[in-house]
Amino acid sequence: ALQTAEENEDPKYAVECPLGTILRVEKVGGSTSRGENAYGLEIFCKDMRNLRFAHKQENHSRRIVYEKLLQMAFPLPNIKEFFCFKLQEKFRDNGWDVYDAIRDLQRQGLPTDCWRISKINDKYALCDTYPPLVGVPTDVTDEDLKLVAPFRSRSRIPVLSWLHPVNNASITRCSQPMCGVRGTRNKDDEKYLQNILEANPQCHKLFIMDARPKINAVANQAKGGGYESDEFYQNTELIFLDIANIHVMRESLRKLKDICFPSIDDVHWLANLEATHYLEHIKLILAGAVRIADLVDRCRTSVVVHCSDGWDRTAQLTALSMLLLDPYYRTIVGFEVLIEKEWLSFGHKFAQRCGHGDKNYSDDQRSPVFVQFIDCVWQITRQFPCAFEFNEHFLITILDHLHSCLFGTFLCNTDCQRVKEEVRSKTCSLWSYINSDMESYMNPLFATYLHNHVLFPVASLRRLELWTSYYIRWNPRMQPQESEEQRNRELFQLTQQSFCIARGKLIPLPEKRSINKTRKIGETVPANHRL
Image (cartoon, rainbow, N blue to C red):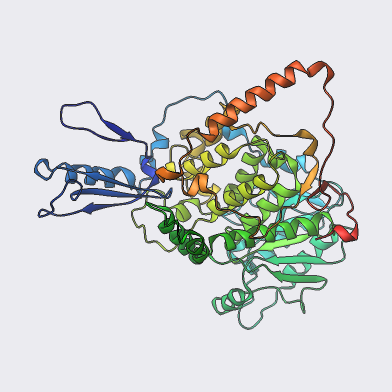
């Protein structure tokens, strides 16, 4: 924590700001500055707030604090200087044990007649941004995979993310094909996608969901990338989802911060919010996930998802669609598994996108990709408040520690790097911290009778709202008199007491639901209720 105090006095005021949250530090004022707060330091944070500290010119405290902050907040290239490597706290649960790739694939039913678990990436030999174990069609050999890898950007071949428990439709993820401007073909890649299609006997067409706007995908051809041609990829349909790239998203968040902190223009609030286009981006991400979930569940169609490299927008879409389809991922531990699986093991570049310990705050590789994913999850919880075991405090805690570097969970860009840096053995997992105090993160409204339903949120600006509890929480006028965390804890305790009292004659709640919003996994929907 940062503390301010007069010399020889106890601290008068403490500000909690993890060093990892600091974006940049700037000196305010010079030797000729006059006024109470004209000389000091301003700290810009990654969590939507700025902090300004006044210093006395005569005691040189500003220089001392400035140099110390730069040293401690930006330790790169020495990753071992992050606080998580020094944290000695012990927790009841070992969060590193939450996710096990074999266990998760087996939970989905693998191996099956159509899908198998491959060890082709053992020791990260095929792709250093993929996990060691991957799910692939049974008819595809490891030698076949080696022929496909050079044709996919960074060797990120199509592999299984999720398998429908009833209709065998699958969600697979990958990176863009390296077609280039000449439209280069790779028959092994074409055959591989046909194998994915045939792994679902009920499916006669494979949908390829390209997260990018088409104009961006076309532009990528000049760099050697591109997209699948229906001329060469038989029985496929390519759909562009128009989700903007990391640079557009970064600029949108910057505009949002400008209108939220330190003050809010109440008169022009709605116009200013619209000008950021932030909610429009959230809408497109959520709409893409809903579309994938609908294809997999209702249409019983297998889907391949990719963007350019397959570690940003692809992760958003696969993780969100799996959250909608699979109630396991809507539990606390299940959501932790989802993050470990779709984000961490598949190489989302957390270190680069968040700028952990890097003083180059203008790096154009930074982007709020994961923040947007959590925002989309929050939007879904607003529309289905009883379908999730976790509460808002859980989501905010994850985002706070995305930047804090108090835990090793979000360090590095890939699993391969985390193994090299011994993150698992030398740091604590965020899930250790959370799972040692589950009650704080429990949703008191969680209804288990919704646990076997697919969710279909409305991805419309009419239904979406700005997550003020996260983006504007530092504005003094927006802070609630009673914290959401405290309200949830009290309500959860009341519901637990009520459950215990009525336990002997508990009557299950009726399945009241709107048929076009949720349905049981695999349940057929009448035509007049379809999306």
